[in-house]
Image 1: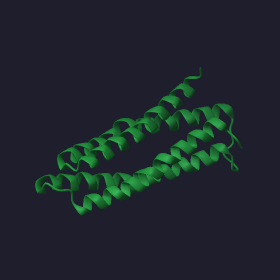
Image 2: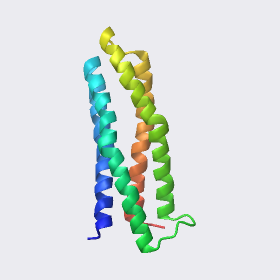
Image 3: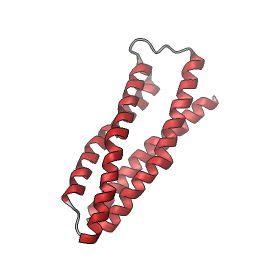
Length: 153
């Protein structure tokens, strides 16, 4: 098997796996309504993004670029690769511009909630926005994965 394809698949597994798993644990923590549990979870969601999602994305970019170059693939016109790259960029923008700041806010608000013993409205609002944009940023990579496998156009 091609080393670039192997690295690409590892990057995909690490990043998508972490995105889904982190969301699962964050939602589970929110359901406890316990500020300490929630704070611990949101801090670790952020850490997991840096430890797993970001390296996975780097692997995807490097290995995907190498495979496209080796295959002589064109980035002109709309095809499965260019659409995948557009969706990948949109996902990255959502993550960097919206989700990371929301996660920082959730960490701050959940820490403040520990002293009061109840979850603040600021945390709830940030968490709600995180869930909406996080769902989009989770579904887009799944669409990209489909495009990469199907290569339909």
